[in-house]
Image 1 (cartoon, rainbow, N blue to C red):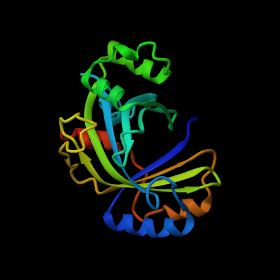
Image 2 (cartoon, rainbow, N blue to C red):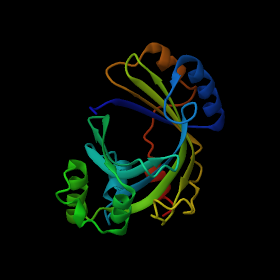
Image 3 (cartoon, one colour):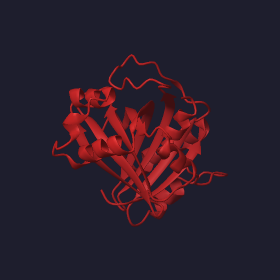
Image 4 (cartoon, helix red, strand yellow):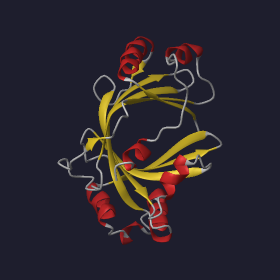
Length: 223
């Protein structure tokens, strides 16, 4: 995927309800999940010195971070993803993993990653060896996603953000997570070369300005 424009707002519960009502009229629910709603579990990686965390907090450009992710508890579709930020634009690349492969990464049994034929998996292996990247925390949340074909627009409403604290048992559905502080919900708007005025107007909120927000950073406050 190429680099895309991205807006983020931390929003209130009333904002969430208002945006949901508007977007249901103007946009199409994402085909994943039920009416565009699904559960996301991610496991983020960082170095012993918290390189990804501090680069995010300090607005370093360019920057990147790695994560494992699956949806709605379905362990048959697990992905390794790398999110990159450059010149204010974002991109994401991914590679599939089997459950046993994901567990071996969590356990630190990573020699199989070298020469596995998946460039992103090999890149993570190299950075685990050189930079000391390791799993740091689980991030859980509910996502409501909407799409709009002109501009390839995707709008997401993420809420019920929870953190695994020190737990990295990514594949364990019984891993205890707790609410991530005061982060009520997050609005994200992503598009390619242009954002249609109809959608631009729909996502405007009185008194809200675009501001950096990282679910990983919010969850790392607790471990």
